[in-house]
Amino acid sequence: MKIAVFAGDGIGPEVVHEAVRVLEKLDLPGMELIEGDVGGAAWRKHGHPLPQATIDIAHAADAILFGSVGDFDCDHLERHLRPEQAILGLRKELTLFANLRPATVFKGLEDLTTLRAEVASQIDLLIVRELNGDVYFGEKGVRTLDDGRRQGWDMMSYAEDEVRRIAHVAFRAAQGRQGRLCSVDKANVLETSQLWRDVVIEVAAEYPDVELSHMYVDNAAMQLVKNPGQFDVVVTGNLFGDILSDQASMCVGSIGLLASASLGETQTQYGTKGLYEPIHGSAPDIAGQGKANPMAQILSAAMMLRHSFGLEEQAARIEKAVATALANGVKGGDLGGSAGTREIGDAVVSAL
Image (tube, rainbow, N blue to C red; front, side):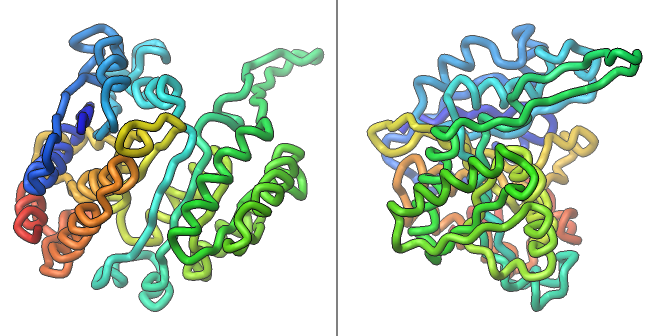
C-alpha cells in the first residue's frame, strides 16, 4: 500500500503529522508512506510548486494524502509558480475529476452551527463536485470593446462525457447511502446546465434503485440552510459545487471537520486512485503554533482507506474515534475549545 504524503504549507505539516500517527496506530500490513514537496515549500526547495519528483511519487502511489498549500509570501510570484498550482496540477496530472465532500453534524456539536440545533442535527449529506470542467477550466480573458471599455470573460462548458462520468460516480455513491440523488444546475437560464440535466436523466436509467431529483442552484443554497436534512447525495458542476460545499461546511459547525476525496478513473490493485485532503486552507496565521484542528485531515485519511483501499472497517474505526474524542470534549479553537493539535491527535489515537 503505497501512500504519497504531501504535507505542503502552513498548518499542513502539523495536521498531516497527526493523520499519519493515526494511520500508523492501525498497523496496516504493507503500508509504505512516501513524502514529497508541494506548494510554497516546494517552490523554496525546487523552484516550482509541483516539481517532477513529486509528480513521479504521485504516479507511483496508490493514493495521495494531501495537506494544504498557500503562502502569503508567495503572492508576488507569477500565477504558474504560486503554491495553489500544486493541487490544480495534481488534479490535472492524475485526471481527478470527482470531488466527494461529506458533511455530517457530529453528535454534541449541534449548538456550534449557525443553524438551529434541531435543523443542524439532520445534516448527513455528500456533495459530489465535478473538478475538471466548467467555467474554471474554460477559455477566459480580458478584451477591449469597440467603445473602449474592458470586458472580462470566462466560458462555461461541459461535454456530455464529462457529465456522464461524474453522474455515474454520484449514482453509485447514492446506492451506498440512502438511495437519493439531487442534481443541482441552473437549467432555466444556462445551456450548459440544460445539457447537464439531460445527460444526468439519461444516466439515471441505469440506476433504477436511486431516486433522482433536480434543483436550481439558488434554491439549493437556500434549502441547505432551510432544510438540509432533505439531501442525501448532491451532484453538481465545478462552480456550483465549490460554493455549495463551502456553505455546507458552515452548516456543520466548522470547516475544520470536513474531509474530501478527489477521485479519477485510474484503478490500482486495491481500488480507485485518489487524492485526499481537508477542505480548509493552509492558515498561515496560526502555522507552527500547535493550534490547528487536525480532525479534517484525519477524516481525510479515513476516506482514503475507504475509497482507495476498500478498508471500510478501518475507515469506520477512525471516524468513530474522532466522534469519541469530540464527545469527550476534546475540541480545537475552531469549535470553541482549547485543545491543541497534538492533544487532539492523542485523543483520536487513544480512542482507536
